[in-house]
Image 1: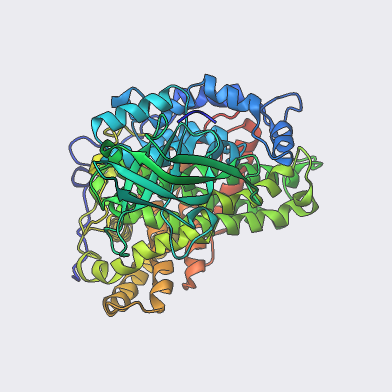
Image 2 (image 1 turned 135 degrees about the horizontal axis):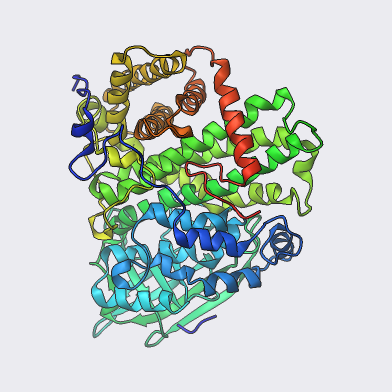
Length: 593
């Protein structure tokens, strides 16, 4: 195209859990320094609060108000070759794993979600179907587009429970003499106006089963005949700097080689490849919420001679920090699973996307109380808060994404209850070691099934190890009690979910909510164990106690009162990171400004 069972899992030993190539949980942690490319990008984007910085908050807010992309910053990202991050290493790009990709993208998302999406992350979401099911020629062609600085856009299939991006669809029918004719219209496609290639989910069957759709690669170059029209722009309530517009096809003729995979593979390819976005979206959007926490710390400490927030904000700042670490633990675990255990990552990815939006929205509501009137300020200092509130629903953290993940998880609950919970063996400890080396991501190994439940196995194992440990201090004692409460919740879930029938039951939605929170708790315990013995902040049980306490309260569980030293430990870490310019995520890496 032209550009425009019943038995508990045995407690694992360090050697059993780690596997032959993974460090034991109590060994020194790997270096989690920021990847060099991420550090360079953070430095190039500069101090976000510098009024003279063309990539800072003032410039980004002006572009958002004018509803256009920040041109100078897009030029910077293009010069940095950011599009190469979305192309697998074997095809000439830099993509080797989702965790590292998320860390490279966080400097962008920390400043502007619309920029992160509009410049190119959606190119990965489009291309992932080709990386997963395309042939070598298709992969090379699409890699060439992205490595050359072009963009790919995704044209979704229609879903019954949909937002504007998912409404309407394209149909494809065989062309006499070979190939395909595509017709249809989509009114909301991100970057349709300037995409060099489109990955389209087209209806190839009148039925509504799992074989109803197929995937097609349109471009680069024009179709053999017919028409592809790029329609006018659609203004969105959020992500105002990103360009959404329509796309209309009228008997657009594509060769047989445009079909990705086989006829009817569309749903399967979507389920397999969308796992990437299920973890990557929360794992990058978290950086935007982290920036709001930093703003809240600034608001709570400015004009305070001692640099300490007033007492009423201590639990809010510490609690949101604990939530961010819990969300990061869950997202990073999901992203690492894509490389380490791709055949078993499907349900985990859906659970990450299902759980994190609600937690992050709750955190923003809490931070709004700290910001007070500043939260309504549209100026360069605090205006990014309201921008993030507008952007989050458009960025895939609204009801449609939740419903899709719910549809994945609900049918699996009775299966997991009857076959996996308290039976699955624990995964390698490397799953919970952020920054540790991973095998390269192999898109073709991604599956949309799996009989095991990795995180519940870790929950049961970690609770057993805490229970058996002698000489515990008050924090580890609190952590053991909390871990046992989640194991008890899993027992209750197993009983209720095993009784579900094949037809949909409304109570299944509530059970999915509770199950997903149990998985979040398990990710926290896994990451805390993975840092044991390192002496750093994440090896301290305080953050894990706080995170599990907040999750347990959301479940309505009876939990002990939070030890006083927990809040002080988390608040001290937040303030220290704020003063020294380090990120408020699992990594604590250096920031610009």
